[in-house]
Length: 126
Length: 334
Image 1 (cartoon, each protein chain N blue to C red):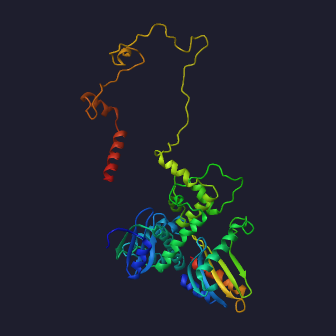
Image 2: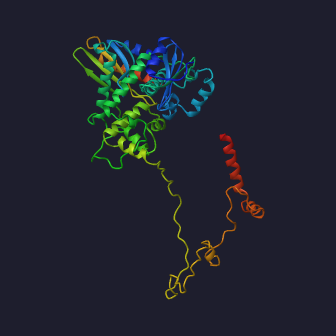
Image 3: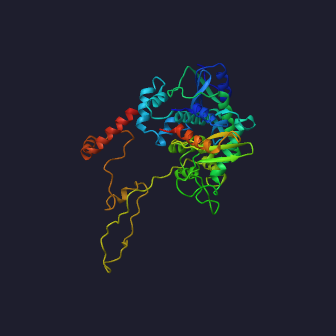
């Protein structure tokens, strides 16, 4: 049964991972963080993460009208890296997102995405 | 144990944490709260305005109320409720940690938010949940302040956070878009529930609730705070209970046309009551008026014996049972 620390350690084991965190996107607060963050600031990275998730969830362009067709993940690509945001679905009330920063050269987007899906599911699996 | 004094809760927490203390920082006032320290690290916090771990887990249906109660019964005395839930496999470590972290930061916002409040540090006190997470107190204090600022950026009216939530009867715009959380709040806001009531009812974080309510107020969908201030000055208004049951027609004797006038016509001169007489005396013989069975008594005076005996016969069974139940209930309140 993995805890939060364990989950972040495994996220850092994803090839090319530079930093990882779990962010509360209502407040833009890093509940837990490890490794590096853009501009070496986990707090600022969390606030930015929250803005991106909220934008994707509130702009009707990205919001599906089909019931239960919820936002799963977001990928932001820069010349140097990938920023992967995966929503953690808990049964109880929370608004959490797993964030992994990946090196563009060493990282593999498909592998990272699948690993993050497994991590987010295992974190709350029964 | 220090005596209760008025201070900045955040500063006192940092101070207690610096001394690596174990105990509970109890913050009074509205809504107040308690922050638990274990060897200088924050391990839990609770507040009436923020649903606790139990409410979050049971309101969402993640745990059956029975399961939660069983863990409480087994673990409260040893402060091991959290570990018991994990050992019995009801929750994963990750879930419980995330839930406790969320509840802790949520309650800490309410406990540490006020700049000054009556505070008391109970050394040695531990929470029954047990040690599931530990958080740097400085981070908790910083986050509580930051959350306060975030709310003011949305809509700077803190009065909204504690007053009953009153949706506007008519939206001020032609078309409105709501998030799922906002819809839930508006559906359950009945004009009486406060944000804390709504958070407990829905099993949603107290801060997230307030945040959505401030957004709704900014959109003009819930009554602005100044309207409520005016309402608060007047007498307390109580909503009368809704009328139950259905209306029934009163049976009246059918009248035939030509039966005579429907309104009785007074023919003779009405005798005017003499000025000294009591108002009832002149009409005492009239058919419409029945004199009272009892003379006016002083408050608390006993009934005459024959009538007092009469009343016990008049109300057999049910009323006596009801009175006994009321008496037992009143005794239980003492």
